[in-house]
Length: 265
Image 1 (cartoon, rainbow, N blue to C red):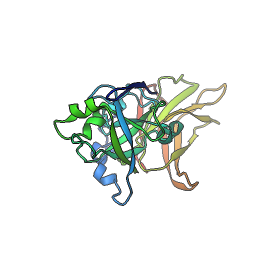
Image 2: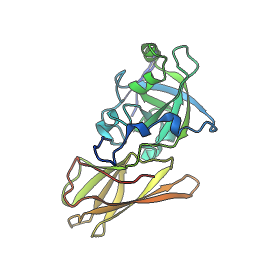
Image 3: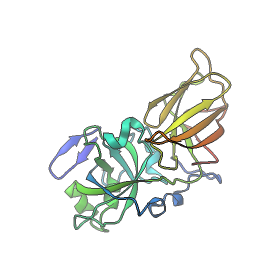
Image 4: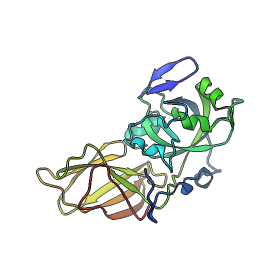
């Protein structure tokens, strides 16, 4: 991953549906999810990828090209270790803005953590080119891009993607014995999500990395349909809401397919 600065180059390391349970871009509204009473934190921000791009084509969170489409629309960030948190920070939302440069608009936008910047400091944001441009004044995006880095104000906000969670079957799945699935577009501000999976067998469930989990039953075929149970967890040890996605993965599941729930946090 390339971090753009004014003098230094450092190597750093979601789809619309036509159903009524779609992931609707109108729900992803910074003014709706922001908390004006919450204090802003200070850090530095750079950018990577192309000036109008989504950062990485893949990203450590394994979201792939879905970050280019609504509701995320390329507004992503590769985060330092304290934000990325070994993948538990994937999908979390942050309100960001810059105010100390004439090219900065001072207006906030909401970005989604979709990648890791392993060579960045703990709270550093390496924004996508599109996200970096979005904090600039109209017509001054190129100026900010050439500057390469800015002081950034940020704060964690609750994600509000809409009324549907998406489960995307990963390319590394091997039907019918092994499945990898990414859990995407999860609302709220939990530190991480606990996942339980129930089918007609005794599954082993483990986190592969980022937002991706693996499901397998050693020596046997998977036995869908599968029901997923998600529970919000917070850093102080408290438990948030629990929701169930009944039979969200069907009997005839396919690699690359996106399955959408009828509920969200």
